[in-house]
Amino acid sequence: MKRRDWVRIAAIITLAVAILWLMGRAPICTCGTVKLWHGAVHSAQNSQHIADWYSFGHVIHGFIFYGLMWLVAKKKPLGWRFTAAVAIEALWEVAENSPLIINRYRTATFALHYYGDSIINSVSDIGFMMLGFLVARRLPVGATIALALIMEMFTLAMIRDNLTLNVLMLLWPVEAIRHWQAG
Image 1 (cartoon, rainbow, N blue to C red):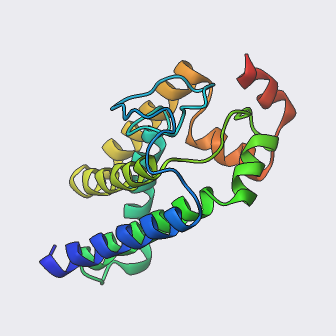
Image 2 (image 1 turned 90 degrees about the horizontal axis):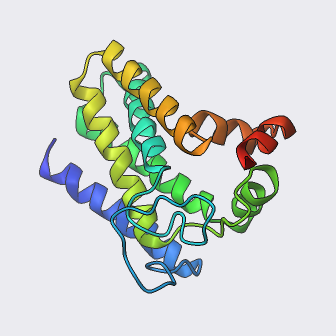
């Protein structure tokens, strides 16, 4: 990738930060600390720090975006595809922190304590997607799929949630799954 690709990516992330700031998102956890890892899902600090259980899902976003960009834009340079993936993830971070999506998570999933992401968490989520994209670029397809499945099963076992269930419950909530997730 070229320097101009990194400049564009930095501009996209900066724009996302500015929009999140204007939306009233807190720069860091309102608890006043920044943790590298926060593992309590049923907590007001979930999605407020650098990494959490949902970071695995953002790595998988990178796997998915790499595959989609290869399918729909394989003739475009890698830098263009990577920048497009960052733009999509940044758009999702802004949308995810809108009142509409926050309220949807709170009513359709077991995320009753979810009030949106801090800005540092949103930027980290974009970074985890970037990591996933770059890993998928290097790994064979089968290894990437296997790694995604391992991460999905691991988070499912650890917190009764993962990217697949997150998307399902956001789009088409299943009451039995919601009850199971609540423990």
